[in-house]
Length: 334
Length: 241
Image 1 (spheres, rainbow over the protein chains, first blue to last red):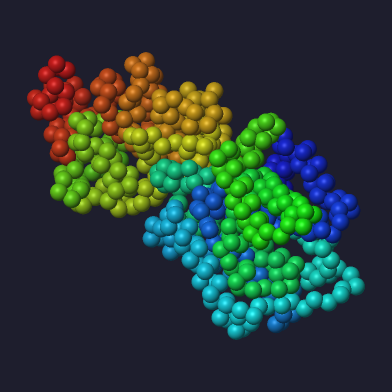
Image 2: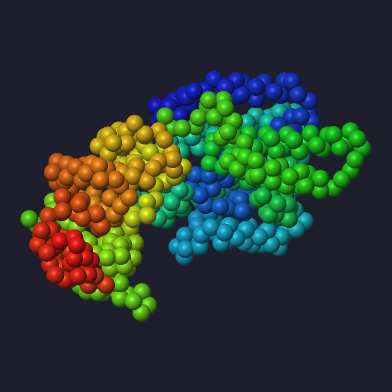
């Protein structure tokens, strides 16, 4: 285990990566509360984007319903916490498999019956919508009135129960993002990663090369769903409130995929860079509008749309691949 | 020599068209067996049936004593039948080496071992120097070689080649012939090929099957098949003799 881990972490990009990580580790000492919240948001989207990227970027399966797995992660752990006092980390042991099973159900239906491409994407939206409507009427989790986690003033940070100040949450989501990055890199450089890429590139050719594409697509959905569920756990414990309308909404799913698309689908740095560019710029826009006393509802969405349009037209691979080439940092497997 | 592949009375119908009509033949282990015939004769359809990409309407396909008809293509490949596609389909955004590594991972757990095996095959196919290039940047002859390398990487006992010589210059054809011959001789690999390039067929095949309108009209040693009046009439043309 340690040998591939080391191999996965040492490359030409190791030094810039170490500097980046150091900057992230030290950031809370230099930024104010507002900026810290923005950084948390960026890392949240980097993490969720990385998880989505496993399915789309690696295995080529477009999910437009990843809010489903975020919502499941959030609701399962929040319910276990509020009803039974079970902490989020133990809750995750239930939430991640539940998300994976839901992913498996969707994957099974789609892959067994040949639902692919756009139709598969629509199926993922449909399931997220089922969940939204279902939870909206599920009294056990307070239906549409929402689920609230008890908020108290804590004398100290409780990492085990994820109760504490934003700095603690910042380090938690930073650790999660690093974990997702390392996991994705390991996966991409392993047998399963090669098979995923082959399926993404040409499913028929992959089958001719002996790959059981059904099985490997199922793995992709399940891993992606399980990893995504932690984004929901974080969401629930950071914001302390959950509404089905909010967590399962399609706009949540779209937000998740914008980062990787802008950063570069299928790359390891794309989701991180994309989250930075998008959330960073959007928050700058917000701050500027605030400074000029402008209040334009929906400006952020228009801005997201404009960013997406610009990237699709000017940098169809996303921001990262051309940037990486310019910096001489290739993500090749050498 | 034992039969490695037996095709018995295989038929395939596309609506009104009988694309393959009760074709039977046997490929002995270690042989190089060619299927020739005019366009639309049903050669690629027959290949697709053997490789599991299509289900036949009738007949049986037996590989190494086991019926493989109706198995999905990946299962057929895992049993030892690898194929190339007439219209090449490498993994475009992957490097040449990664393309072949994917194949080599079929029967290997370790990426390093698979990569080493892929490099051996790339040397054999004259692609080693281009191993870091993206498959999408290769010329057509190189892509054809890449398909052969990827198929070989899966460790087949039987290699199905669908017109790998098409579009190659005569010198490139001779090189491919030499490579395939060496593989056959050194590893005992059985090869079944569809080919229009008679120069390659005559140089490679120990046995030839001629298809016309889905029907096997002749089978035998290449020298005798090309003199068969029915073959000359339907496919080769009078000048070829």
